Length: 111
Image (cartoon, rainbow, N blue to C red; front, side, top):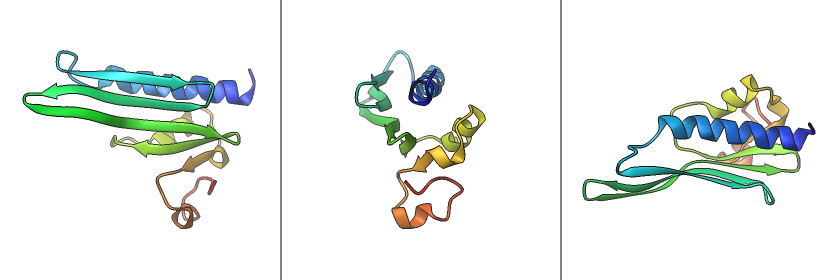
């Protein structure tokens, strides 16, 4: 399996695992959005908690130029650490929600 196909599989697995742990199945649904053609991957919440609307991303990943970009992480988990445990080298992970200046101080790629 080539690197990009492997990264796509890892991201999908990570999002599916989080989807199983998330949401109230009766009122708040999880949506997995996999755009393998453009390499965009999301886990969203959609539904209601009482009279409050719940809608929005929980996690968003992109693959750009052979690297996994963590564009959003609305969980308490360090998904970058999870990616490393799943075999992705630090040099292929970008914390996209940090500014380019701030990324230089992480153990991951600046982009």
